[in-house]
Structure formats: C-alpha cells, structure tokens
Image 1 (cartoon, rainbow, N blue to C red):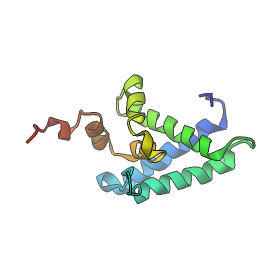
Image 2: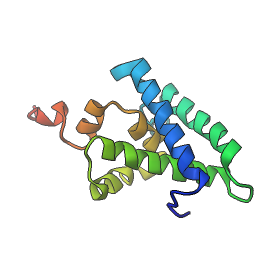
Image 3: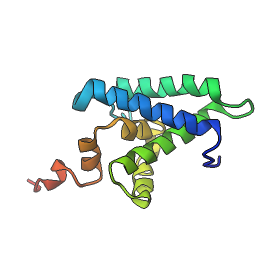
Length: 134
C-alpha cells in the first residue's frame, strides 16, 4: 500500500491518533496499553483502540481492499507519527516499530497509546534508562 496523503487511509490514521490522544488524556500514565506477549493478551485499552480503528476503517476503506491489511498499515503509520510527535527520528522510529514483530498490531497500538514518558523509556531516553544496573 502506498503512503498517499490523498486517500482515505490517511483519514483513518488521523482518527486513530485522535482516539489515542483522548484515551491518554482520560487514563494518563495508568493507561492499560501494554502489547501483551506469548500467552498474554494485550491491555484492554490497546484492544479497544484496535477494535475501534477496525470499525472506523470498515466505513471508509474502498471495496476491494483487505480490511485487516489496511488496519495494520494504519496502525503502523499512526505509530510512526506518534513517535515523531515525541521527537524520535524516522529511521529510529522504523527500528522501534520493527522491534516486536510477534506482537502483530498490538505493538503499534502500544506505541500509539503509550504516554510520552513510557515511549522515552522504550527508546532508552527516559527515567528507567537513567538507573544504573543493580
């Protein structure tokens, strides 16, 4: 899929980012955004964001496109924009997005929802990275 700013998919990216911003505002640092892992489901807010995005995209995706593929594309683009918002350069953002391929759409969902402080920890620039190993 192309990254064409003129198509409806980018509208979905903006909607996903808007929903995530509202959820971060509502829940703050206690947001249940974690991406899950082997044998563990993603957090409820992460799952709710992805379910909402799928419903929204279902109303704007042109016929002939596979909704799950568009959802993945949209979440990836939204995660890249979120990382850019907190000052992560494009190359590093791509590497972060590729960090957890086994988590599927839950990983970009986490990056979209995570408060700035948490993203800074993920990229090694936050308080957790300031601690010396024990």
